[in-house]
Length: 243
Length: 144
Ligand code: SF4
Image (cartoon, rainbow over all chains, first blue to last red; front, side):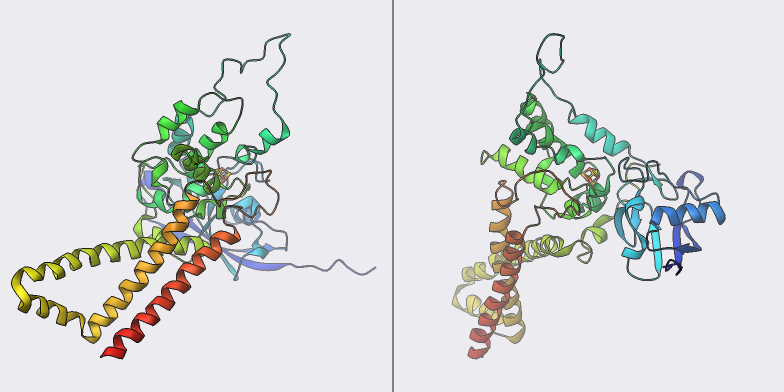
């Protein structure tokens, strides 16, 4: 029986290391990792951590692009490490760095306080007196067409890649960010929700929706097809009275 | 851990190489906007020379009749055309038009907001700016 052809190769992995709380300098640790065609960047980082240096700091959980924990800069672009195969990347060296526009906790781990604060601020839940289902009362129904209007935005996993790619996030420390703005549209487009005016008031400020200039980078990097840039422009259309 | 650390800053914002033609157009829009603002200020200075009479006016006008002056004016033409055409695209898109229709996301998740109509509009703005610049160069250097 012929052997299964192997795509095994050795990849050089460069991991950016830093620990701001300890005041240490930034550096890169390099590892040579055996990889196959299907090896993800997260697999490679974990191999480096298991067999090279246990102290590498990395956050991950589901390994299937569902939890949104392993966002990082991979060869200069924000991506999910579990969703990026090494064989898809150009060049023999893979460089991983902590996600930009997020404060570093340690090595590849960044703080999500700002993203969660922005998300919480826009009231990410259905606002309606009829939202609670009581016994004997029929649930809030929607047609498939009504569902289509917001379902893609409901797929957001709060990974923060969009905020990391956004040019306004790069320069404005108070910008709401594409993640939370797209979530405003998710609720505004939901026929069950009655909180439109409340939410629009929250984002209609100097660091809110009008700071988006439609560079579209958020949508380019989103691993779930949320397309935040689309949601934000549709929202602007609502606010300007075009929609 | 400070709230601001690790932000990309202006260098990251102005890096045109990572996120395709849409990001390139965004940066070009900003640069041309600043360029036109600078031209606007210079233009006010230039036209205010009329207050010094004909001699003052001719003196300032002579500055635009040099090779350097023609190159600057050619750049202004390019900036003006790109900023106008791309600006019209942005006004339409930011009104929620031409952004694509929301729907269930399917792998490989190509963003519908980065659609062909937008790309064509961006390339058209660049081509029109280039054509206008070439026309401007022909007219101005033809006169030299
Ligand atoms: S919109 Fe996309 S990129 Fe942004 S947080 Fe949600 S899933 Fe991540």
